[in-house]
Structures are given as structure tokens and as C-alpha cells.
Amino acid sequence: MSVKIDILIPAVNNSYFTCALIKSIKNTTKIPFNIIYIDNGSEASEFNNVLISLQDINHLIIRNHQNLGFVKAINQGLKLSTAEYICFQNNDTLVFENCFERLIKHLDNLPNVGIISPIASEGGGKQGIEILKSRWSWLDKEISRIDLCRSSHADINNFLYQRFQNQATEVNTSLAFFSVVMSRRTFERIGYLDERYGLGLYEDDDYCQRIVSAGLKLYIALDVYVWHLASTTFKSIYSDNKIMNLMIENQKIFEDKWINA
Image 1 (tube, rainbow, N blue to C red):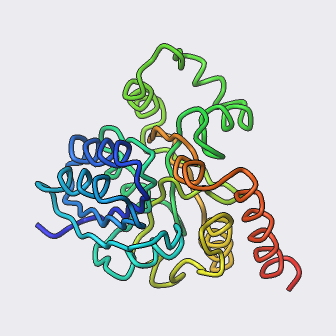
Image 2: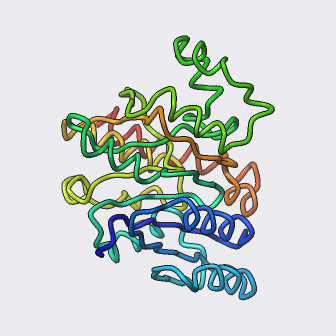
């Protein structure tokens, strides 16, 4: 059976998270998948840990001997991707039952969809469940039926599926690329990530803007939930000052491209 989805996972060290993610993908994904692991200069022991976790599943490996950053790593993975669907997946995430199956179903059924993302756990960035609750009162009302603090992440995923099966909502803001899926058709239309964003930050905003400019839409799947510990790689490598400088530099690149042009 041909691979249905290529799951691109870039990482630098933090193999504990990467191996846990791979295990969660293996245990909860029923469709044929291929993991494309892009190692951005991990220590040998960390790299070997990931190799062991990949042994009994379909995978491809790219090993860079230095950290090229998220953007270049994803583009390297895209060059190897051949599947009908493509996922960008941060290594500091965990997926649950039928995550990719549900996301693909949305892509097959939604009008003019460009890219889709799941709901993230609390603290998981702009798609984090607490942020979405504060933004959408109707979602807050529904989610109040489950105790988020006492429920397991798998239980939250199941609750969202039971309550919002096959439902997704369009968003006008950009999506954070901790976990996003698009069709090959969309990728062939939009292309690679813009490598001017270097190590990362604002590359997801840029890609989403390109999708919207092409007449396609951004969606969040209401029936899919992913655990996400935001910015694990960035915080483990870069100082707060470095991250702030990167943000300022890349914000200027984004604004010069889309606002000041």
C-alpha cells in the first residue's frame, strides 16, 4: 500500500521528545505513513536514540552536521516527500487516535482548503485550547463540559471528536506550524518555505499569507487535539535575547514583503 502521508519532523537533540512523538504516531496512525526525520546537528547519542525509535517503521533520514534551522530543514524534507499529503510536525508534540486520518478527511471535504491544523494543548501557542476558548465563546461553552485539568490528553482528544466530529473552522489569522497538514496539490501550488526567515519565526505567517493570497483557506480542525510543549528547541538552543532579535529581524522581513511592499 502506498504511503498516504509524509510526516516531516525536524529536531536538534531533545531525543526524548522526538522518540515519544514517533511512538505516538506509530501507536495511533492506521493509514500508511512515512516519517522524514531531519536532524539538525544533534549529538551522536541523541541521533542514535531517534534511529532506534525509527527502526520498525517507514522512514527517511536527513542528517545535517550543524543546525540549519527549521525553515531549511523543512525544505530539505519537502524535497524528499512524495506522498499525497504532507505534515510539518514539531518534535515536542504528541498525537492521539486517528489524528492524521481526521486531518486528511477535512482536507478532502473542505472548500478551497489550503492547510489545516489541530487544536493544541494549553500552552501550545496560538492554536492552544485556552487561547481558542478565550477567542470563541461558543467553544468555551462546549469545552467547559470536560475538566481539562483532570482529563488525560487522549480523553480530551476523544471528547473533541465526539463533540465536533468532522467540524473545522476557518481562521483569518495565520497558523502556527507545530502540526499542520496540506495536500501535495497545495504544496505544488504554494512551494517551499521562504528561507529568508533563516532559523525560524514568521516563516509560518509568511506561508499562510501565501496560501491566502492564492485564494485558499486556513482551517483549525475542531475534532483533532495534539499535545504541544511550545518552543522546546528554540529555548534549549537560543537565549531569550537571541530569540527576541530573531523575532525583530524576521518581523521586518515579513512586513517588508507583505505590508510595506
